[in-house]
Length: 115
Length: 109
Image (cartoon, rainbow over all chains, first blue to last red; front, side):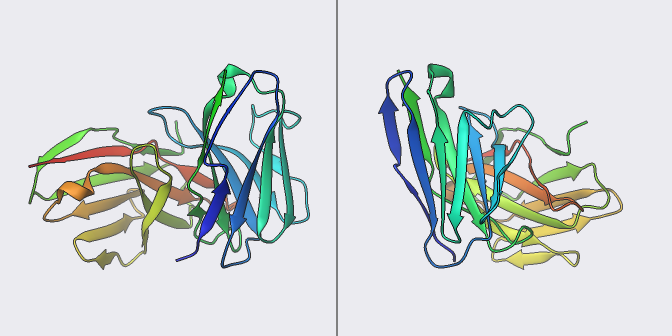
């Protein structure tokens, strides 16, 4: 099956710093990448959908200036959490799909802890 | 009403049991359906797609009932390793993905 990697897998940072998370599709071209957040014992919450070369589409309630998404190539998307605060601590998961209706393949996730 | 709804469980079953989960969706024009499995603190992994004609993969059977707007997942001969949370995913007619909140399964010895 398709492989998606995420880096870093775990990050601990101080409040006010920015954190960048990378999502890569290793063996296929991902036209669309999705970013999710999952709080403990809760379901995945879609944050934004990004298509290569265009601006991301953010879900209602997600601040686009706080969660910067860049999808510069067909194999790489990045999520930058700017000025992170403790309430941003969560499990961030990306997924990639060949087209918007294709199966989503998930990265292993990044556990962010903001102190 | 939520777009996709699942019974959160947990379903506690003994090894060898047969267990079934349902997932209801609200948009009758939804196009594609999937079951994902998520282990604790890990990312979801695709278990199987759900086709109109139903599909089977070993001990797992997925079915779609468009008239009643639900999909189901049947697991036969449960193994301890089947313990996980099972998420249903529905893609609507606008190509938007919706995840259910998941059904937790505990298979006990």
